[in-house]
Length: 478
Image (cartoon, rainbow, N blue to C red; front, side, top):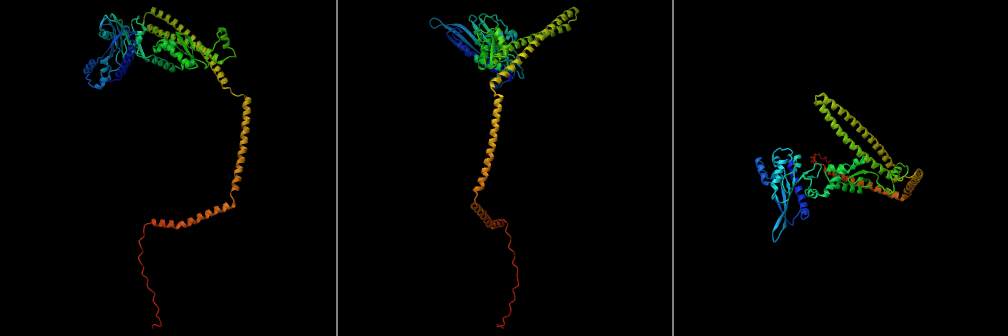
């Protein structure tokens, strides 16, 4: 199976496990009822039929596919005696394009369109007289028409859920009167996971804090999270890092990096006193750094907003140029030329304002850099030139004294070695050497015999005949 099927199976499991936990918590609170019955269904039979159509009979591949599982919770309220009356039904359902997933060599599955969503919801309505809250999750996403669907079904509240591109989930409803706590029931992501996503985003964009700042609205819109959640993460991050500071109103906070020491303004300090303290030659450098960093962050936000407006004007300029090329009427072309000329002037003005903001940001950044150097220099508490000179002289004298002591010790060791060796000890050492020489001479024949024994045996020589000497005659015997 392709990787899309595996990812959609993971989405199905994550969604159902998270939503079921929240639905269990909402029983008797958000969901009315004292008695509950849970039912589980899926499209396993339809999935097998689709696999048989495509001639896929592998059971292992069947386990790798989403089964369009769904959970239904039926709420009841007890009546007289042993009776009970239905109060409502809540559905948590998954809708995947099974045919596109089973097909061999399939690319990314298509999103769920409006007719398929309507047919799926109608099958889930058990009793039209009872309130139904249906949350449909599409791992492949919805088409714009399906997202804006307003089903003409009585007592049915539809909530659409789909994975967000940047992580998390997009939970929405076409009905404006749907309460926020109902949408929160179908969001499988926990509050701690949302905060972790905000922290990861702030950490990833930490480089922006060095030159400008991060606004609450930009982070909230990118992550598709409520501003309350993002604001909580921003305040926690600023509380943990002494160099991070938060400014602005609650609905649009601004996070920026300043000095490590937090600001402590006087309650009676007005605007004139703040400006006077900011440009005074004396005072706390950390206070000045924080004030300048806050001003730089606000200027950077204004500059980024201008860049966005310039991009929109440039897109409109491209559109007018295309209209002028396609339209052959001279009257229309003159009108488009006048609009285009005015538009380019507006773009030039916006660029001029952006350049001015860049220069202001550069000046403030330079001043912050200089103040930071001053602050770091004061924190180091380096010794004065007199102290450095005095310490250098003392160190040089210490080295000279150490050198003299080392030479004296060397001379003493040489004298001791000469005195410690007496004539008697020298004579004994000479006897040791003579004994070694005698032992060496005694061992030499043994070494020769050992070497000769190692040689191969030599055959014995043949005896040589010799003539015996003639005896002289004994005169007496004669």
